[in-house]
Every structure is written in structure tokens, then in C-alpha cells.
Image (tube, rainbow over all chains, first blue to last red; front, side, top):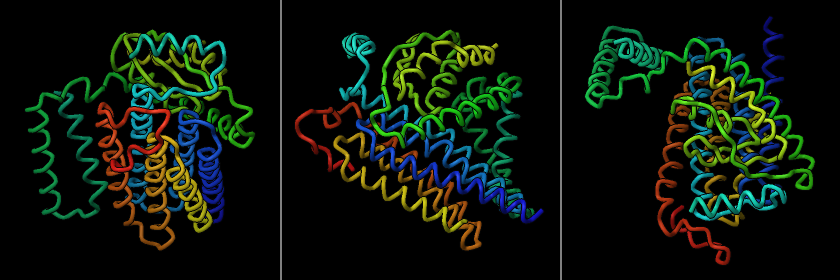
Length: 116
Length: 156
Length: 97
């Protein structure tokens, strides 16, 4: 039972580490701000969820478990709010996404003219 | 009344899980601070259906399970495209229509869009959301309306 | 495995710092700072388990709250002129951060 728990926890921690490093690589590799935001979203949602779940398997104490759940809920509730505020501030201050498809590019021009 | 009780239960659980000391002095201090917070919240007139959305709790757990599944799927897609490089992505920006009536439903929908990696809700005006997506196909699947339908089911 | 995960978080924080230094626009920098803060929360939790002192989780909760408030606080001023995105000059905004 003990061994099974530590193996599961190690697996979760491994996936979480891989996702966090992937998000870090994505934030370096992607071409413009909006695409980088998606890469940061990977580490904010599933990356941290996996690592905190892995720690939950090792907690062995109700209080520690509850605090881990609290940190996880906080991250999951706060993450979308922050990225939405950031994206909205960037868009309204005139930072346009690059490399859009031709089809949505016409849409995009209408959007900005009606918006600002 | 039931909103006040729900606020009390939430705050009490928060205090109990954070403190870890259960003697009489600490517990009574907790009770006093909870009472103080409920008093202030009542004065501010924020103890209502908006801050304690109890009517959501019937269907919200099924929605959470579905959302977790979606988040895992979206994450694997985005990670795949991170390692494939910038040639493989096709960013898109489009307005999509939403069918929710209440503010709560709209906010839940926009937050769910932002929470799934690969799509970010940039702006919410009336009944349209401006969405930026890493892969243009993601917006098409949003327009198909699976998530929209599920959020609309929540608000009845 | 705990130590390996801690090192992985360190690598992710390092990459975020690179983006924060290199980032062409102000918003890239804010994004990098936000990601750095989230990673710090994870790092504190992991270090608490590595050192066998789960009390560190309290600090992690407080740090998550501070991170949220600080990012929202910076973006609160996004209506002002200094946040306008200009194509030509890259760093009009180092004072804010």
C-alpha cells in the first residue's frame, strides 16, 4: 500500500514536472504575446494540478491535505482571472495578435475598429 | 437567511482547516472573527445569490468532471504543439455567440474558456465573447456549442 | 522524485525569467512575472515536503494571494498612457515593474 502510494505520487509529480518544463519552453518558443499566454496556461492549470495532486498522495494528514486542496483551488480560481485581465489590457491598449489566418484577419479588423 | 448560513459554514471550514489548534481560546477567537466578517458583509449588502450561488450546486459537480476532462485534452494538444514548434500553430481571433441569460452563466462560460489552455476569452460584450485560440480548430469546436449547452443547463 | 520535481520547477522559473528579461512588450514581462509567481507557490509547497515541514503550505497560500493582488494591482493602471503599446520604442515602461 505504501509503495503503491509513492509510485502513484511519483508518477503525478513526473507528469507535472514535464508539463511545467513544456510550458517554460513554450513561453520561450512561441512568436507573440497571445500565443505565449496559452503556454503559460498549461503550467497554470494542469501542471500545478498534477504536482499538487502528487503531493496530496504523500500528505498523510488531514490538515496538510486540506491545505493542498486550498492552494489548488486558489490557483485554479485565480489563474483564469489573471490571464483574462492581462489579455484584455493588452488588447485594449493596441497590442494585436500576429500571424492570424486570412479568414479571421478581416474579422479582426472589424473588431478593433468597432472596439476602440 | 440560507446565504448567511452558507457564508458561515464556508468561513468556519476555512478557519478550522487553516488553524490546526483546537482549544477553547482559539475557537472562540475564530467565532468572533467570523461573526465580525458576517456583520461587515451584511452591512455591505453582499450576502446574496451572487456571492453565494447555492442554486448552482445541483449540477455543478457533473460540469466540473466534464471540465477536468476537457482541460486534460486541451493540455495534451497544447503541449504537443509546443514541442512541434511555431510552424504548426494557427492562431485565430473571432467573436462567438453565447446563449446564457444571466451574468453568472456568462462569467462561468468565459472563465471555462480561459481555463482550458489553447483558448482565451479576451472580451465579453452583451452576448458575444471575443476568443483568441492557439489552433483555429479549437474555436470551431467552441462554436459547435458543447460547452455552451452545458453551461446553459447550469443556470436554470 | 520530490527533488527532481523541485529542479524541474527551477528550470521552468529560469525560462520564465528569460522571457521576462527578453520580452519585447510590457505584457510579456507581466506574463512572465505572473508565471514566476505561480511557480514560486509550487516551489514553496515542494520544498516544504522535501524538508519535511508541511507548515510551509501556509506561506504558499499567502504567496498565491500576494501574487494575484500584485498582478491585478499593476494592471489596474492599464488605462493610463504608459501602458499603450507602441511599435517603435521597446522599453518605455521599466519604471513600473
